[in-house]
Length: 102
Image (cartoon, rainbow, N blue to C red):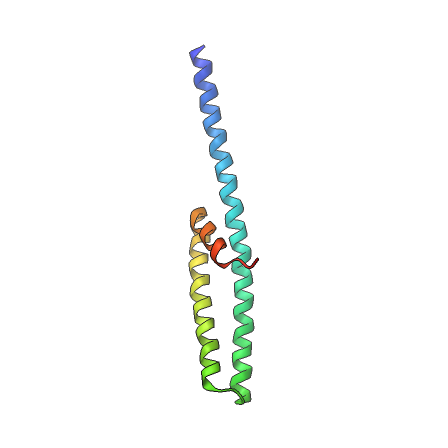
């Protein structure tokens, strides 16, 4: 009887580990979608900055604000990519809470 209990306990432990791993994968996949959205937004802002610099109808302050926004967005995206590459589900959840658009 003890052997059966040990075998069942071991199988339950392995099953629990697989369930936790599946949950982490979902969060990391969601983070990948947020990273892709941020990269698209960065490209839009870069185009907007180039257009505004060519028009010369806007002030340097406005262009500076857009450049600052772009820099902050790139830093944020790099941190997200690091968490994604490491499959760190805890950091992925934190980033999703902070930066995911609802």
